[in-house]
Image (cartoon, rainbow, N blue to C red; front, side, top):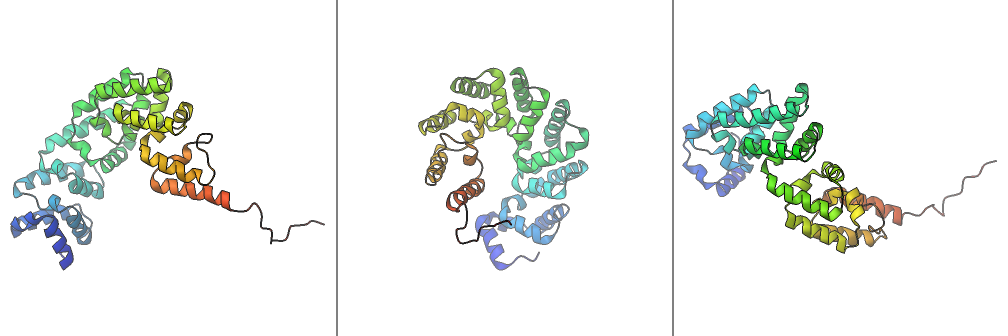
Length: 300
């Protein structure tokens, strides 16, 4: 297949069981993967990164073949199918009917919540790409969680927003845990039910965190001098651990930015997002207002 010696060595180190697969099994497996993988070079990269997904038992080949045919029938991008096979191989080793149940539930939920049929394929591709393991979750759990959120006053459009933003992780939630999280959040922020829904729509991950994690993060923010009103304005700050918040607050304070009186937006985002915001702030602080060497413009 064109793999180099070091690549083969890496595969065997990470997945020594590969030596137990006979050449006929590997030929059959390669034919399956080549049907969705663009080229051999990319396939070699996938095998090196996900060897356990490629070196599977011959007893799974029929299920794999049927699942590939099913996802191709949905007109999903080949790269999406390849990613599903690599990162969630269990979903391809099981009977295709089990995946059909989950996909049908996702599609039906999308349409019932007001999603446009024309955009459904793109929506499904994005969701499966971001969270391949959603196929392995319970379709009934998805229905129960959406029903719970509907009972809490979320509109169909808002439910579709949450389903999309949570990238299928809504299947991992449970009504009891969500209820505890929402009650605690409402008590901490002293807000109404309508205000709480607005906060959740800004920060859907709020539904995902258990109460003890939220307690630690609220206490950390309040202990750093951040007000409840600031948290309500920028609830996504609750997605950051207390350690990350404290580190970023210290870096900002070193350049004269007091988060207690300013916006928390600068704290938000990934490490890359923060470094960009921090860099812009540092430039504003360090760059002189004018260049004293440059001649001033004059007008006749």
